[in-house]
Length: 369
Image 1 (tube, rainbow, N blue to C red):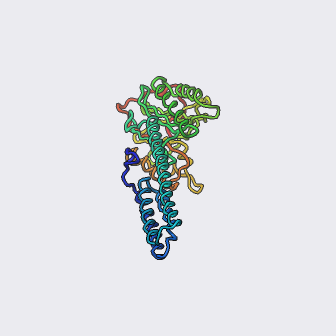
Image 2 (cartoon, helix red, strand yellow):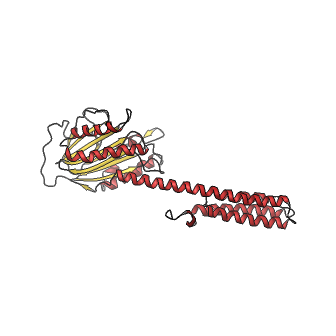
Image 3 (cartoon, rainbow, N blue to C red):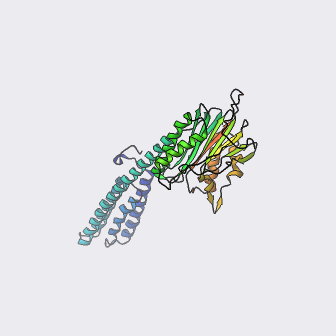
């Protein structure tokens, strides 16, 4: 139980394993001593018992193992005849080993407690930055998923958000260069700016300009944020892309990469964006992802996202689809991801009232596919 202090912990599986290993060693050395009844030549080996326990167990278990080893050692020294200097030194050595091992176990457990607390704080920080999505935002069913590359921490610079604004449903997905707290800090800056300008700016181009300024004020010369901004307005999908992997449109069994009309650099490098515009059909799904998905590979072979997208994502709820994709991805890389991955899956259910809002005049691109 992590909420209890170390001194009041129940016997954990690790402690049971440590105590079991120590008792086995205690039994082995005792058997050797019993085979050689005339002297206590092997009593000093009992000093290894608490050191074996410390590999797995809390200090209390180490102390129990050490005390047992000391008592058994004293019994064998007494059975060998009058107390001798070597016998006394052997018993003292067991006591000393027990004290050292208990101290090591205490320090190790304190470090483990600190790591657990840091992991908890990292998770809380990540959850504060990435709020839960969906399940419904405007006319879109929405699900988001964050897959950490390491089991030890869920913290990184991937980001996403979906908002129902006066200008339609707006979604961002992005990836901050770098990892750790600096990446989380910059991701929080981008999301904070996005959550403001998404309600204030009438078009995505102006939003990109605002976000670029926010990033430029907060990073060094070599730092940047790749991002894709998506807007659904009356059945019209508009995408602007700032150096980010192209979203995938899933339509009637086909997977269509929505590449931008012209490439643009990431946020922080003053991107000049051109929009990709699509007319949505009821049942269309859109996958947004960070480059960790494109870089996932095993034995040099990349995960076939486009080939498997419809089979994995085209059925069930959007949450089910992302769960299937994560399972297949982790399976593909044998549980070893090289980068964190953010995933957002959208499904268009159709306009609520049948009305279609006009496209903004600034948007350019090919409608339909």
